[in-house]
Image (cartoon, rainbow, N blue to C red; front, top):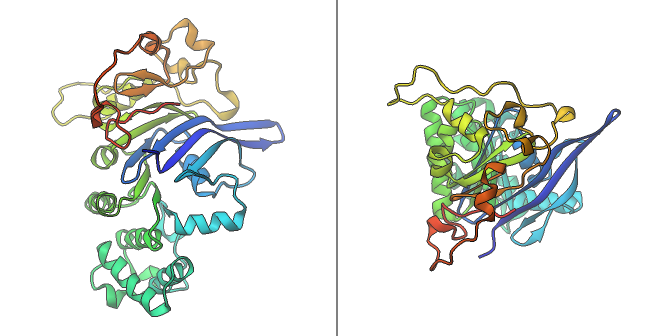
Length: 348
């Protein structure tokens, strides 16, 4: 079964007076219908830039310099602006960290929802308004029929984020790109938004790309997780395996820095140093200056994603495993790489 979204060897550049900066370099992954792919990493790793590239909202002078983005088998990264606008509303929904960036303060939420529905679906205004009420109710807005005529400032932060999710789902998209959708919310509201996203995937078959720095949100929501570092995918695999058995030293450092309720460690793991600037990415593996398991080759050759257990990791530590012949096996189970399953593997 082919993936709903395929990102192949994506490269994003920013031309400057001092040369061209490469912000995303050879990023590849896929998402199946009904699957949640979590994307994590430090600030500046390229998470939000990847999402912006997919939905066609790269800030100039940023540009896609190489690679392809395919939605349901159709290439969308090279579409004219007008066609991409239709795709963005109809086939791809977007949820951003600050709901006020997505809502017009001068119009009621009902008008904004209804306009989106009328634009992309074959409905009259009255039908669209009724559908807007249903969407608000589905996303957990109480007294939706009364609140539909309220303005964004009349909603709390959590309720505004629910309105934004309703807006993203208004045209029944196949894919939702959610960029830090719970960061500005308190913990109880976060849990409700997470449950809402999971229910949408379960009931509607919507695929979700969930961009966040919060591993707790990833653990609760995602089927698979991609860990990004310096504009590349460092590791990708089933969420439980990446969290409990990380295969890349950077992922291991991220997981080790999270306090455990049942642990007795006196000190948390610390990753020395900081992520390199775009104009100072070292040769070889970008993580090698901060890596305690660095090999001589790591400072010279850049690793591609290599098989590492049930995951894929861009690390030379797994070169021997990648070169070893794999014994033929019977029919794949979801844990053995069946496309769309929680254990599905990536090939880049």
